[in-house]
Length: 137
Image 1: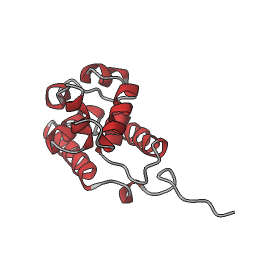
Image 2: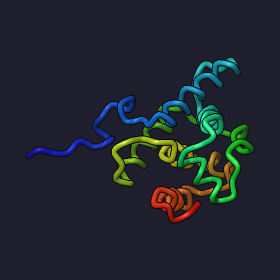
Image 3: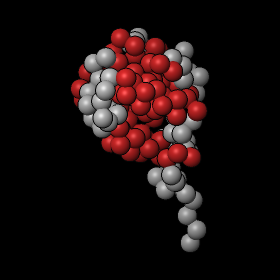
């Protein structure tokens, strides 16, 4: 029986939106500037803040949160763990891509990151859906 490939089956590089890739690139640059030997959730928060647009930023703004102010308080959860969670979030939402919104949701699995942003995973997931459907600006 033929089975449709999902975001869980495909290489991540081919799934990332341009903004998500840009956020990851900025996260890597931030880690390098800071002299860190690995990219973490905190660097990714800075990368998302650096992109400054996209569904993740729109979601946080619509919830009254400021990514830039929260980014400095990110955690040292490894990027691989965040990316795997982001991929699972995309699959759970039925998406065939990984965008900034999925990166945000992947980050929010960590309670320290969620506390730094002042938003929980379930609240953010519901808001992402609203933003994607144009229900909330």
